Every structure is written in structure tokens, then in C-alpha cells.
Image (tube, rainbow, N blue to C red; front, side, top):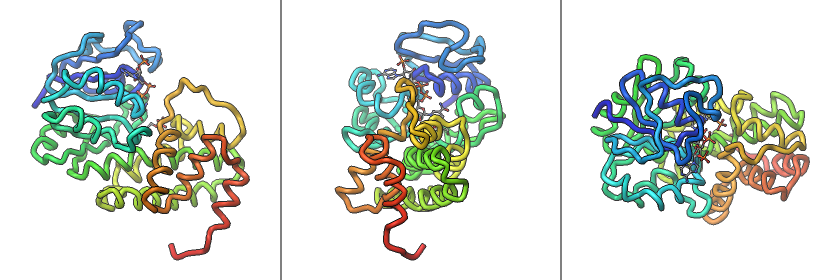
Length: 312
Ligand SMILES: NC(=O)C1=CN([C@@H]2O[C@H](COP(=O)(O)OP(=O)(O)OC[C@H]3O[C@@H](n4cnc5c(N)ncnc54)[C@H](OP(=O)(O)O)[C@@H]3O)[C@@H](O)[C@H]2O)C=CC1
Ligand SMILES: O=C(CO)COP(=O)(O)O
């Protein structure tokens, strides 16, 4: 498994991955409507290397990286599953599908039963990857041999991939950290202070682990790049759209609905699953309520602090 890589989804992350992976050889970047050339407005300031071919025709590469947002994935798979089946499919989306409660990898496996499905996740802003800054990610694949091959095919001199067979843990770490990043942004936006943010990161991480283990993950996976690593990045940096969305919520300001904020829908999905399956997810549930306008920040804080005292 080498070369022969295509990225489906020409947003910020897909474009950044194309730029990074072109260091190893030719890469195809597919988008449903490419209205630009040379520089993608989704990733301003980044010129595409010659080794990247941009196309609106679905490519026939051996390894396909899917970089469309989680809530768009079911529509994408409904349209293109037949073309994707039988290949190595690498999910790059960080979310849980609101309609089905499923993870992107699970959706891909259901839609493409003959495909080998893997997940690429971890702390990585598109802008950093595209600039060639050093980045470490997790490649998760239940098939250890395929995971090993993908790890090598998708690593470069500055993009260092670690591997795991715990697909559920890696994928849920990336999805759930977006929800906690929103919560951290709310704390800062509402002027609650850095100590409150630290409490949210720490207790949010406990929630992430609880939910992931409930769904079959290994707890250790959450302490890695895909969980704690990505949580640290997005809960502390205004480079994160989820954090910025939380800032706006905390300040009582609006936020451009065209910007991809995976954590908002994921919070709703998590809240529904938590309620149905009795998993204690207080921060995520309040973020779902805040995002839906059902609760305000003051009330959310009161509700969090009024919970019974417990062991850590
Ligand atoms: N940006 C980042 O730093 C990182 C992002 N990610 C993850 O990558 C995923 C994508 O995020 P990102 O690239 O930033 O998002 P963007 O909003 O920048 O881009 C999303 C892209 O998906 C395309 N798209 C949406 N629906 C469909 C569809 N049905 N068929 C084909 N294409 C579709 C959009 O196309 P169109 O413009 O035509 O609507 C757009 O090009 C998310 O899950 C995110 O969490 C992971 C790590 C880092
Ligand atoms: O997942 C990311 C970094 O690892 C990107 O975070 P945002 O989607 O919040 O911008």
C-alpha cells in the first residue's frame, strides 16, 4: 500500500491532508464543486503543490481518505458507497451522526461492507498541517496488518502517525473532545476564568472516557493523541472552531452557521444516547441544551455546580 491516495472532501482538512501527503507522491483531491484553482478559499494562503490533482470526478485510488463533516457523511455515502466499496477507507471526520447515533467508521462499514475502514484522528489544525508544521496523529484500524500499512503510507517526515486497533476509542476521542472544547470556550467567553476551564477540561475528559468505555473503547486510548491530545489542543486554542463557537455562546454572540462546528450536533447525539442508556454526561448534555437555546450559561453553571458531591 503506497502512493495511490485520494482525499474526498475539499474543505480545510481535506486540502491540508492533500498538501501534506503530496510530500510522498501524487495525491488526488476530490470536491463536489471545485470553483477555485491554485488556492482553496477554505484554506487561505496555501498554494497546492503540483503533486496534487484537483478533480470533481471520483477517483479510483486504493486508499481513500474521507474528509467530509460527520453530519454530511450519510448523504455522501448514500450517493457514493458503490464507488467506495472494496477499498481502504480512512475516516477523518470527528463527530457522531445525529440521525443514527453512529460513528463515521461504523457508517462507512455499513455502507461499504467489502471495504477496510480506518480512522485518522488526533490534534491537528488544518492550517498547521498545510504549513508543514510537525504533527502527530493516530491511525486506528481493527485489522492490525492493514493499519500498519496505512500508518506507513500516510506518514511523512513531519506527519507522524501512531497506530491502534481501538477504532471506537480513537474515533470517540475525536468526536467528544469537540463537545468539551465548546464547553471550555463557553467558560472563557462567559468570563468564568481559567480555573473553571481547567475543571471543564478535566471533568470533560472523565465524561469522554466514561462514554467511550460504555461504547466498547479501551480507556487507555482516550489518554492518547486522539482523546486527551486533541482535547488539550481544541480546549485551549482560538484556532479551534468548536472553541470559538463556545466563546460566542458564552458571550451571548451569534456565530456564522456556515462554519463547520462538529461539536454542536455531536453534543445533541451524545445527550440523546446518554439519556437513553443512562450514561452520566452532565457537561455534554448542558452543551446540547445551550446550543439549542434551551438553557442559558448562568443556569447551565448553576445546574453543574448543584450536582451532588462525589468521589473523583
Ligand atoms: N479543519 C481542521 O483543522 C480539522 C478538521 N477535521 C475534521 O475534518 C472534517 C471536515 O472538516 P473541514 O474540512 O475542516 O470542514 P470544512 O467546512 O472546511 O469543509 C467541509 C467540506 O466537506 C464538503 N462536503 C460537505 N458535504 C458534502 C457532501 N455531501 N459531498 C461532498 N462533499 C461534501 C464541503 O463541500 P462544499 O464546500 O461543497 O459544501 C466542504 O468542502 C470534520 O469532521 C472535522 O472535524 C479534523 C482535523 C482537523
Ligand atoms: O479537530 C481539530 C483539531 O484537531 C479541529 O478543531 P475544530 O474543528 O474545532 O477547528
